[in-house]
Image (cartoon, rainbow over all chains, first blue to last red; front, side, top):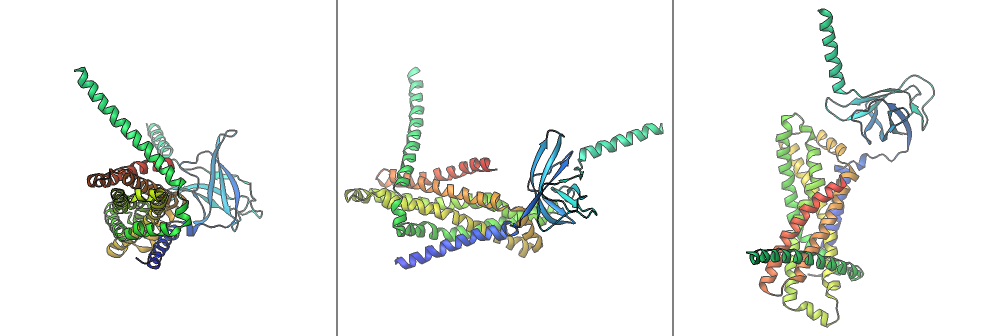
Length: 156
Length: 261
């Protein structure tokens, strides 16, 4: 086979292969939705994070505003310390409320931010003071059973 | 009685020693290829020629196979997900299974049987017809001139083929899931995009297929170079190439997945 034809076919092959890789990255994968915008860090303490994982989403009014960057156990307070990277475009008041919520009945857990009414905004490195831990289903069932049994004993 | 047992033990020992020897020689062969691969880059048309014969010629089988694997995934996935009322997750099911596992593994298996066996037969036959000895007589290093370009062509070709396999598979899943069955198109793509991570899924798949490409071509080239210079020798080597590289792909797939998860 002539050398130019060969080169042409290999060129087509390589371009098609690289095109497939780019398609995988942008159309199939999430590289297209990666925002390269700058972020700032906030911290929050939770007594129980449930099934929250690093890279979980942070939403406010359902809009994605950031990602959980790190989760550690603070051994001074024995509480989970969650570091959140929030998009610089979004500022939150100082009395913002951070809840750990579940998307759907069995979906993954995320952090919901409910802004308060204060004038000053949270700065990078600040701690979100008002938090609500994850709802653990076993605790809920336990409380329910305990309540119903105590109600029964009161009736007697 | 004791002599029978001794004979048996000697047999086992010989088999194990032979296997170890082959692995050792194979590793030395790989390092020889790496040491002598200067020519395959300085005279790049050698590598391009091999890319044509191993990569471009495998294109049709890879694309058709990928398409049908994706279509089957779409059909089976839909049947299973329907029971839980989560047909919208079909996109992420098809894409994740293709990008993470099926793309790299099946593309490498097809490459091993389509291109690997051909490499073994070609090099084995070059040995039978004493072309390799003739090259050595002319002071041309056959490893640098014949073997190394084929190795690098395999390492380049398999990741590209795997990516094309995955894309065709996603397209096949789309055809069956969205066009034929009628899963919602928006949720098909958005679920897929939110669940497939570029680094964790796509790049790991590409890395896997690079490793598979290197392993398949090294096995194919080594079996060809090592084949006894007879007709039976070459046919046996070709069979061994397909068997060994298929096993190596599947075993390595498990090990790599366990390491990277």
